[in-house]
Length: 135
Image (cartoon, rainbow, N blue to C red):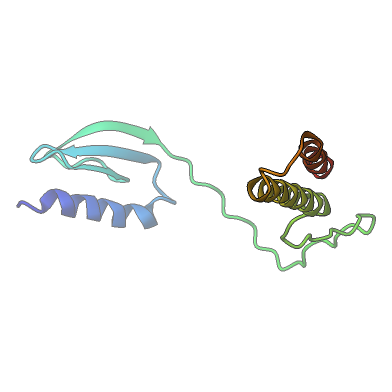
């Protein structure tokens, strides 16, 4: 008796599949014993409560045709598939960033190694070098 609501739901689901084409109503039923809910094509049993009943119109079956699909139009432009990977603009931007980082690294090395010897003109020269490569 404990599994009755589950059996009710299962029976409703199994019974509804073939009967859906002929049935005109769907019923939402709730078992009074434990509150299990089922949607079925048969009226609710006496030991359950009906929540709603809705009219159903079956969908017409799709027409079966053995025809070949229509030909593609001939005036369409070909579709090109782009390979994955960076575009030319992305590659150029990556190269500019790499040159900029190399110039910055060179300027840092010069400042770190020769910090006592560098004059103001040498520092300006390093800054111009970085500015040229980081535009």
